[in-house]
Length: 231
Ligand SMILES: Nc1ncnc2c1ncn2[C@@H]1O[C@H](COP(=O)(O)OP(=O)(O)OP(=O)(O)O)[C@@H](O)[C@H]1O
Ligand SMILES: O=P(O)(O)OC[C@H]1O[C@H](OP(=O)(O)OP(=O)(O)O)[C@H](O)[C@@H]1O
Image 1 (cartoon, helix red, strand yellow):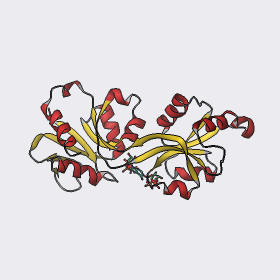
Image 2 (cartoon, protein in one colour):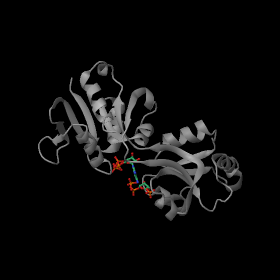
Image 3 (cartoon, protein in one colour):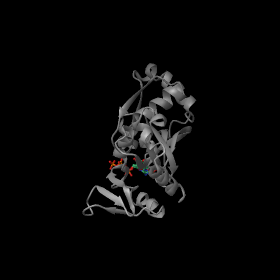
């Protein structure tokens, strides 16, 4: 069988992902011209590269359309309901670090923990006539963390597709769940992370779709070993 590895075609993970494979002795060359979305690995005839965006990669691994992918753990866990059953996180690659966090306005002086936020959510409707609104593009992670881990049920998710940190100031939501790396965007928007509000510490990972045909496949094993040996 041909083993397909999906790598970021653009964006912040592209260069680091290719570099890891090069260090692993798997030099990637584009098939056709530089803008091509297909590649191969020099000397590895049964491996094919598909260049996709980081979010497409998590979808394609989830569906099993590709065998391996390099993408952020946040995108995989957000995109797949039962991520650990469907994919294996084979290696954490040491780049693309970002924390998915719960952040509230700095001026909420009495709110420092998820328990404090639970108290706010509980009487939010009585005080304001509506539920606490959370702006995020991480629906699944937010629901798992609020409802599953912290027993907070009284909130409403407001979908945000960009500039999430601006939502509290603009009035479209009260708090946010988003990724942060340096923290400067949160600071610029006068938001603070709750002390136990880190939902996930994400980084780029080598992820494998769990497929029966991988069992005992020497190419699958060699790919995992080659990437792990670089770390
Ligand atoms: N400062 C950051 N901002 C956004 N994503 C970051 C940051 N640092 C690391 N990442 C990670 O990068 C990944 C997203 O990368 P990128 O934005 O290139 O992908 P994408 O969502 O597929 O792109 P696009 O939004 O252009 O389709 C996520 O896994 C995210 O956690
Ligand atoms: O903690 P910081 O270092 O400030 O980074 C966090 C910000 O970076 C990302 O946005 P970005 O503008 O990079 O692009 P994107 O949301 O379009 O991916 C992300 O959505 C945050 O807003």
